[in-house]
Image 1: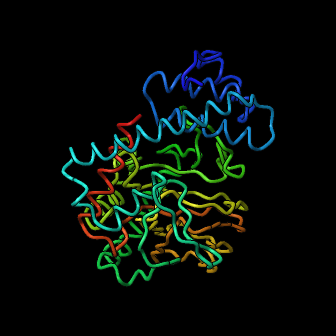
Image 2: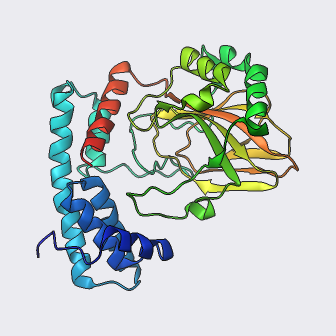
Length: 338
């Protein structure tokens, strides 16, 4: 059975159908075929993968087409592995130089190795990339960070910038937004939901100048004082995270575990908390919180006022500089695969 066949509909037609039904099998296959034809392997694989999941779930699907999607995913995986190894070598990271943890992470990413089973109730379950060999930490002890005081002592200045942005100098958007080249899940009802919203100072590693102009203290404090996680098209992240009064963020898992997510609480009305795994923390203005967001977590704000934190990400302190470089090079290679 050939991997590639002429798409049954245009990308625009498929998008219209998927806007009505995220699990439209024929539309998912058409999107996969269009991306495959353009050499956009990762995007194609994501749509083929969703199509296979739809077929396995018992929803309406063409069995022969589902088999073709599964074959396409195998073909994409083989091309993907070759591309990653070649791209890493071109970036100066040949296989003999890979850090053992990095080598293991890559083997797991491409399906050549399996993660050992864990008995704990709340393991780290990254939605994108698992980095093995790190200690299990829910909330990190922030006193280990030599930059903590430099950040906390600027809380009031950053909070004043945030209040002005809330008053109208910046536009907050839903924290979870759709991606045009990926199948869409509803993330427990949070997709496009402004109950949880954000204003980016750095978005997927790129500074947002129009917002930084209104929050220079926040931007300079984090970029100058903090060992921010740097991954092409993903990090650093630096944003204001707003949780509306009376709202909650359902349990979910983050994308990558080589980093910690940090909260610097700015506006804390009380009667709210962050639950991570088996532990719970309440936000206190000016007291830094750092945690592994790939462990199941949720948050709620049961007060009558909005809660606001400055959110950013940092490398896990256990990692060595060569691991930073290899992880960054890996994701640059992933992106160049389409």
